[in-house]
Amino acid sequence: MNFDEYCQQKAAPPGSSTYYALRQAPAASQPLLTALFALRREFEETVKETSDPAIGRTKLAWWQNELAALASGSPSHPVSKALAAYLPDVQAEYPQLQALLTGFEMDLDQARYLDYPNLRRYVQGVGGTFASLTARATAKDSAQASSWSAPLGEALQLAQFVVDTGNDARHGRIYIPIDEMQRFNVTAADLINRKYSDAFTELMRFETKRARDALRAALVAIPENERRSQRTLVAQAALALALLDEIERDGYHVLHQRIALTPIRKLWIAWRAR
Image (cartoon, rainbow, N blue to C red; front, side, top):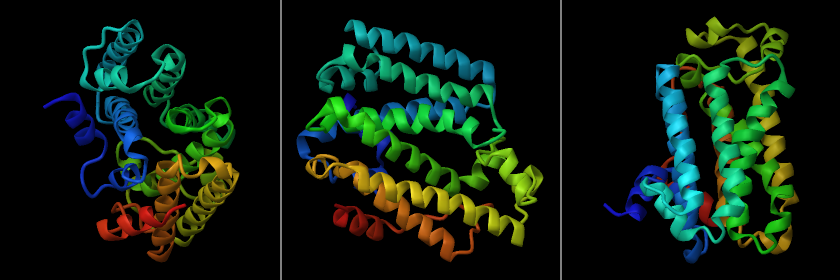
């Protein structure tokens, strides 16, 4: 398996939302974008699929060294080799790659967030940083790309929190701020034990509205001359909005299942996204 095949398998297995979003990018940009999505997935698996935080830290330390090796021109991992092959300026993107790793490292330090400003540090570090990386990879004006792409990445992260509410809780992570749960009279035990209630419905309606409003505002902010080059991010946002609508129609039953769109619907939504 060459590094392109590895990245494709890691980042975007056929039928996934990422698979259809990446297919909307210009053909020349797809290998680089796929490598970036694969890197994000590697970091995510390191912190979220490792039960022992000590092992997670050891793996993150390995990735820290691997990013340094990438910057110095001697990567060893298939994803790093792909980035070396496709990133136009590895040295220029090295600080952002480090920032993305640091963002995911927060998952090893913190499983709950007191309030939204506290949570937003994580959202910016993981969602905003990644969207900036992907936007600059294809933007016509890369110097300005972070100003409009970071908010979109943060919005996509907020939507992901809604989708994964139950699964995250079962794995010991709750990305709904503590003060908001208290305001709606919902406890961590309610989420872990899959307890549905009117209070939970109202809480999820609030969380869903914030994510939806953020997505819509971020989409509007993408410059007109960048929309074609940013088809992958635009498609991701369209898919996230459709999924939030589906969750709402299902009554926010996200504690015992992961609600998803069918592959054919994902294809249609991603293809239509502009």
